[in-house]
Length: 156
Image (cartoon, rainbow, N blue to C red; front, side, top):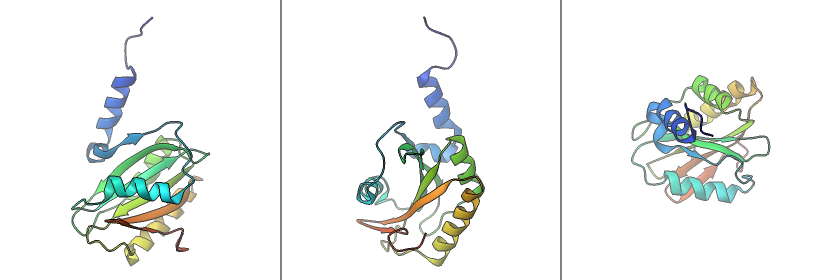
């Protein structure tokens, strides 16, 4: 028996429209594999973010077993900067019932080293997300074929 209203396709379409600019690069893998390998995450991020001529900020939302709930481009900027709002990151994480997140952004310049503002942003996001018991597992900077992991460098 079929019910009228929102089916899976309509829900996905509505969800895709909900985030205006953020909806372009939305991927879902409910119940997907645990993201336990930093190399697998780096490879995924390189494939999805390298070569963009503008900065973009992505969040990978994870469940309590570190399985991917959804990966989204939340913010898009210019060649050298993108504005990231901690309030929006917290709101999106709560909307997906995420237990943890991995953050990522690209550097079109080709230099994967995080800037001072990258470090400050990561600290601000960690503080904001900690208030609602959501952990940041890592923050990656993608620059072409090179990826910097904050966790691997003791920056988280």
